[in-house]
Length: 398
Image 1 (cartoon, one colour):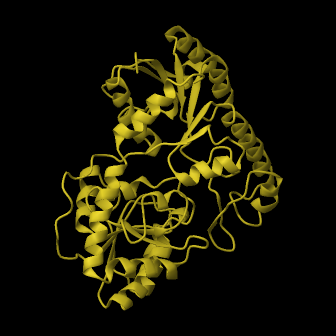
Image 2 (image 1 turned 60 degrees about the horizontal axis):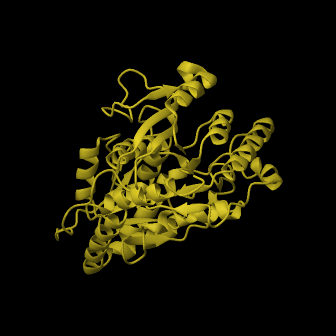
Image 3 (image 1 turned 90 degrees about the horizontal axis):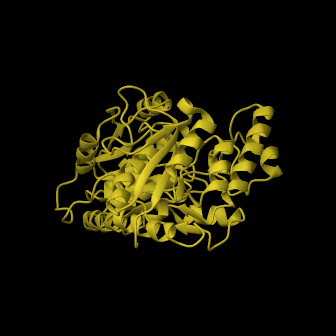
């Protein structure tokens, strides 16, 4: 770019509370390194002791919680941004005001404006991904298919809210997404092919500089993340006895994370005599150490994950994955190359058993998957992401 821009990033939280904030914490200094002046507008400030996504950057930060919507807009106006980069706020009047005043881009981290609950899955009679386009039919299915809560009034209110979100998304000149599945989702919802751009995402930390060295198997299958019904932990537990029988050796499930599904996973593991070790939430160093010891990363999500960054991070240390073929997961889990996939519609424990067996039955195949996962992770590069973003920032009309 000929010169840096005054770029305002907009997000819900200043504290690092999830994947969006982790992404922005890495992205902000990369944009500064490209010569951009950056500032941050958030809805919620960080509490004392919480890690902040702007930590150590010395950039202007405004919070609508502290200043109110109008006060925040006035502070932003004094700073005079040349571009706004929106990452999904709840206050749609704030989003609309920014969109009316400044050239803006939108990054869609989740199913913004395409699903009443935002989960894009039916829970009854069993969890399956949903391919519907947001419309009145969603209201018909919401309660009987258990798409979200059980209040028809809440369903109607959220439906109208998501309709407004979708209408706003259609007004952006460029909408960035992280996977082919997300791009297809928004093309189905009426955005144009020139408008929706798939940009390579990047993990937390660079891949190892060399391919993984040979090592004996550990017998460990690792699951990482919050344990909710959407993440499929119970299906994983149910898949392991069949895999153990087919392989003729024991498999231990190691779970790094916690959440409301843990009691069900523990109960299933006890009933099926599956060795399982819950290590709780771990820091980045311990997560990496667990990945280096495991034979497989399991990503058994039963909803269409927009991307699934944990698989790329695992690939960086030579750990292949098994997963259901849902959402953005096939962008990085290529069967026979960087992992193995099970059918995703519907996702079943039997399908996951087959994927685990295919990954582990032959030592030579598993070694190739380890190297393939490492090569895959190298494709998801922070510089490549920023290259695409900067090109879109300087495009006319942005």
